[in-house]
Length: 293
Ligand code: GUN
Image (cartoon, rainbow, N blue to C red; front, side, top):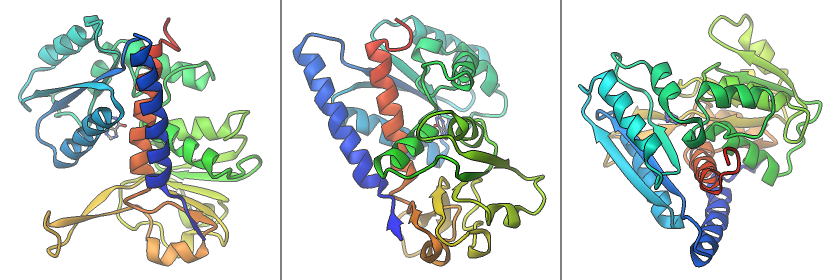
């Protein structure tokens, strides 16, 4: 069993990005600038956004964190997004989700300029992804593709089973793994809460991607010997022995599943760090105007 080391690979990618950023600075080109909007005080969102800002600082990007109270109206938030759209110093914008229930995530995503949509959530960019036109890929699927690529994991002709059909991970991942290129060319099954015989389908997977947000849900009865297992879950479990009062576990019961796998991602230290690497790469592409010249 080989651990897919998101820590090592994401650190390589950050070093590559830092190098290109330093070159841009030396050449007098624009240094990438990411803006992140955080609404309210959701604990995990605070952690993710601060990691994103910290990573910008580490690799030499500029960053701006815009915080708004949970009570901000939808109209006021859309106006703030519009201001970022019109600010030429900012290349990329993310609005961290989940958002308060009174704010439409769809309206928010549609308001972000497609050229600054480094999360790849705008319908135009989703459409381009589906049509395999060059655009921002959503950060988590992008990070997973980079991980598969750097470990040279064979995907062609493999059965890839994805658990969870979210807009952020499962649905785009299913599109990307079916593309006629590497990594891709897999036969994809996208499973969800209404799927019958989930265990049986998962046992057929050569590549199993778990993105449901339920701690330890994937047990050994769902995994074929020799499978590649990608665990997207980042779940907080109460743990009084930790200073924070919690620890992070994935959607996969790692201790019982790992012995069956050819490759598996750990949590933490797997996909989470690759997501940030994907976002940073997208921000550089936004500054380079790769997709929207
Ligand atoms: N919440 C969970 N994952 C993500 C992500 O990739 N982007 C944003 N904006 N919010 C998230």
